[in-house]
Image 1 (tube, rainbow, N blue to C red):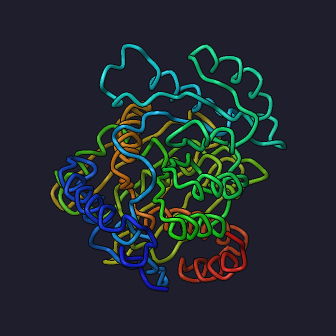
Image 2 (image 1 turned 135 degrees about the horizontal axis):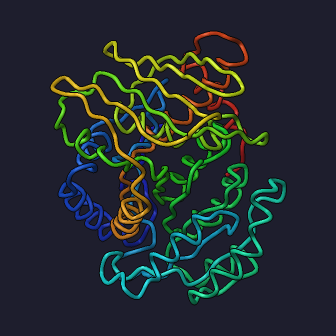
Length: 378
């Protein structure tokens, strides 16, 4: 498959769309600090691991989703996570001023997981609480889409994300998908294929991408990153591959520092701890430690050519929300599809490594997932 170019988008207003895309590119190049590095990744890299060069990086995905600076109505899918309430509180806060450019949550579709007890038990309480912020509860995703401009897909259960994302993409509305993007690499690939098919870019990441101190790393203050060690809680959920449920936070931090280019993964695991070693190109090594016993927190140490940076704590949701709003406005995700997919490939390779007790190539994992994704209907 070839990258989707403007000439391939069947739209009667093609010229206007291309002009908007050029405008968006200019705006994106002006983004600073942490997003500067992603600009280089998104617009210069056109291929991913194992030949996933089918237009899934930001440069090839069209940015024509139906949203502009006047589209301010936000809809939420999934009230089985605290993120739905946390995001709504911030976006709908009368004191927020212009911080979030006027975007407000106006409607929510509560349904999330039907199997994960820690999620299903939250829905009634969160449904009641979110209405205190002026949010209307709807009975279906179609009803939600009829009254909003953009979407936050917050369902805690990643197994539902492909199913719930498809009607949003078909509607042409921009969408942030909370972690994990999906509960399998196969579903993640299918989501990005649908994103490309319907001409709507998507954005997905953990808020730990914006952990304190990371902006100094991504801005180049410590020079080229030659290695990293990150850690986070890594609670397990039997319905998801081990790291997809909670370890993704620390893995996201690792990739934020190291970038793409991981080739192989080796995992060591017991009931208390995970240690996953990733071997990057240019002889770089990055490790993730998942914590299930003792004090659990977030952090890491990044090794650069000119310095070493010890990361701080979780800074909350403001940095992430600011990027989400910027994406809603511009249509340009701050993290490339290539990087998001490689994060999931890393975690899926770690799952295989644990079971087989061997080093696993990301290429083999990606090829297998691509084959499965090709059979899914989008």
